[in-house]
Image 1 (cartoon, rainbow, N blue to C red):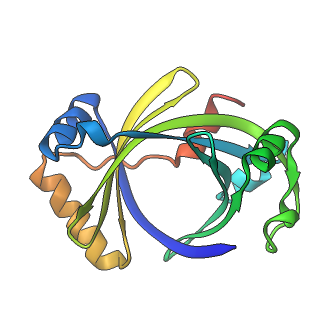
Image 2 (cartoon, rainbow, N blue to C red; image 1 turned 180 degrees about the vertical axis):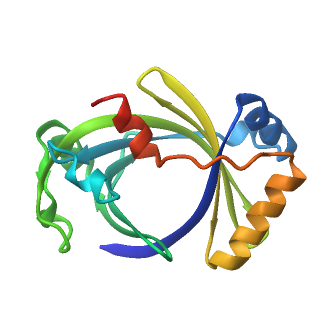
Amino acid sequence: MNRNIEIEFKTVIPKEKYEELLTLFQLENNIYKQTNHYFDTDDYALNQKQIVLRIRQKGEHFFKVTLKSQSEEGAYENHVLLTPEQALDMIENGFQTKDYFDDIDVFVTFKVSLDNYRVSTPYESGTLFLDRCEYCNVVDYEIEYEVNRYQEGWRVFETFLEKHDITFLPTKRKSERAFICKR
């Protein structure tokens, strides 16, 4: 199992700004698709505790299950690589979280998928992501800026938004946005 702390800042943006930034950073040809398959208990107990459980799929052969929980410093992420057969079985039949993560023991089932068409580029002291998310007949766009140090990252993110005339609009996590249309 792999564990890390993710510190990220994000905001929703209009489609026009997304396209403008793709062009500005010359990223139009670097878009890749990753699908997030979200899981929870029947009563969405994990989501209520701000815990995200997903299998991220890239292509036909890369699958990784991630347990992500919020803290004041950022999000703690635990990852386990899966075989395609494991992942597809978990999506179809659900699974016991204790089989993959020591911290939590509940049975979860697949709830919803979100297709994320993503590009990334190094920017200042972190990584800038531009996302086009598709789920439940909804398409939205966001910027994420991922860093190692909170204070410096927030300063760079604020400056980036100001420089590109982007209004900061807090956004819900991708999982929450997708869950809303499935409940």
